[in-house]
Image 1 (cartoon, helix red, strand yellow):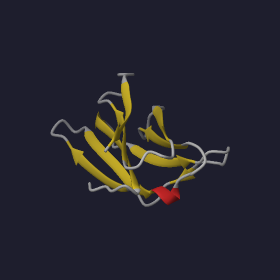
Image 2 (image 1 turned 60 degrees about the vertical axis):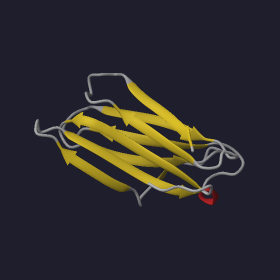
Image 3 (image 1 turned 180 degrees about the vertical axis):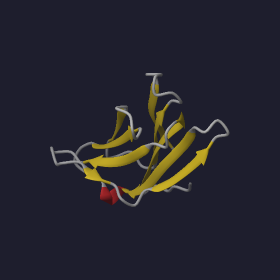
Image 4 (image 1 turned 135 degrees about the horizontal axis):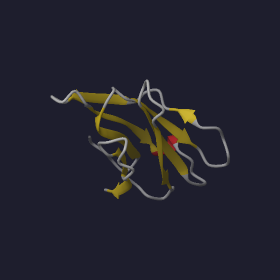
Length: 122
């Protein structure tokens, strides 16, 4: 994925889950505004030989789409249909950082409570 100094790339990934997950990305602007579902997300999925799934969703935001006065929080939601499993991860973008890539990662097993949330400055 290409990036330049006017974009923020956000991705959410889950590996080795079953059944096929529902994943959604939300934008939570600063100032207490309600979260906004991001609808133009690109999704890629792979079914493993074991029957589990790897799913990646991502979106590139233009800097001017994000808050210029405070943090913009990105939230990724993972749900497994037919179960009560739900996981949510958030990461904040602060204005003034030029080109960023944020990646929210859900590890392979819903029973494995470890997860990673990190950002990279390019």
